[in-house]
Image (cartoon, rainbow over the protein chains, first blue to last red):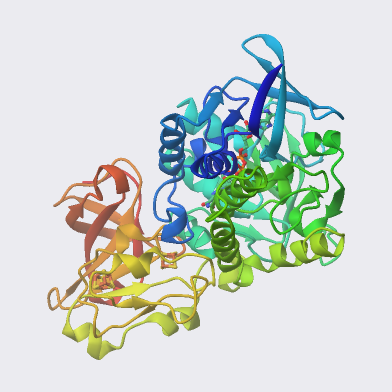
Length: 363
Length: 165
Ligand SMILES: Cc1cc2nc3c(=O)[nH]c(=O)nc-3n(C[C@H](O)[C@H](O)[C@H](O)COP(=O)(O)OP(=O)(O)OC[C@H]3O[C@@H](n4cnc5c(N)ncnc54)[C@H](O)[C@@H]3O)c2cc1C
Ligand code: SF4
Ligand code: SF4
């Protein structure tokens, strides 16, 4: 059994920052990442990020990821296990994982769960045809494997992911015939929508996909306008010729390990699914188990990094590290989160977090 | 249709961020076509003259002080939303320069003609590329200056990728 002070599960922006923060106070960290490289979603993000300078705004996602990964690699307090999937969290606080082909047991004193999120799917006739992908898969093909994934794409969903992946497709020389969105308004940042509109990609709100069709693979899709009751309006059907349909209809938190650990988990719509209830320091209802990033509610890499930092500081502080500085640094991280969430775009998150607090979490 | 429905700024949206004709007559000036309160502020830090500000916090929309701005264009490649443009109506009697960010390949070369696109992506004709500035190894965003007829100075905001002649 491997003994560690702090185990960080997941090597995305939240996990990387949790590891760095815990180590900065002097704690010893093991970070497990199921992929062969850490970085999480950042690895695929070729566009420049938002936020403020404190969250490296203006740098591209993968550059931010690289910078964090290098810092972690150079940190003598942090051990990184890649290709390591954490499988279970047991009642006695033992965590099991698959590491270098073996089933390994870990006994951490504190755990930070930063497993991120999984893509949602959409049901419609023909959605099992080859040529229908989640936006994340298309991004991986394009930006990680360097494969041109399609010729003509129909993008479903005008949140940031749908808008950004359409832009990245265009950069890879792939045409997106349209971005359709069932809601009457664009959910992602309007600067992203404007950017793809002026590149000739129409964003069409109030439309849904009725079906995908094709002989053995996607050859096209039927779309239609919908009314306030989400019913297709007869006579508005359109035939869209495309070889790929890309679904960008949202993410849901990957909370399996939180459930297993016995954390109180509640469905909170504003945070995009079932999320663990936490206090202000990101500790769950199971003492010693912390969460950070998309696993505690779908948000942004900017907030995932700050949450990671907060969870890492809190976990290390609870072990007695950083007595003089921890409280102040925790306060600074909380203030940064408040700043990021202060605007209208943060309203949904603020509402979600209020519900978390009401369900018994935040002090 | 409004900006929130299709991502295309309306005349009313644009009126809020457009410098006056008097200001345009004085030389190049930047226009931040960023209308939504999002948590973002690299533009503020980017401007060496301190011409871009936000009144309360990073969720504010940026305001350009047209008197401080000299149209240098530094902010264009720094904005992650690719929402900042510089327009120079003093370029010549008939032509204005539009400077915009560009992140596609191939990148046009100075002297080539490229097909100009408006904010809806419609083709507006072929115009000469006056200048191409690389954002460098890290930033990677190019800034392109396109020579367009005066009356299209505030219409054209992009070029079609490829086919340059
Ligand atoms: C197309 C797209 C564009 C985006 N654009 C922006 C943007 O411009 N600005 C911004 O701020 N945010 C953006 N985001 C959001 C941002 O990427 C995420 O919010 C952020 O990555 C969340 O960080 P995380 O660390 O919580 O999760 P992730 O980045 O998802 O990382 C989780 C990690 O945990 C690992 N993992 C999961 N389960 C296990 C397990 N059992 N064992 C071991 N490892 C595990 C995963 O492999 C992964 O590496 C974008 C997202 C997408 C998809
Ligand atoms: S063009 Fe130059 S001076 Fe004007 S706002 Fe941008 S950086 Fe500042
Ligand atoms: S950097 Fe660009 S997207 Fe961000 S606030 Fe400034 S103008 Fe808007």
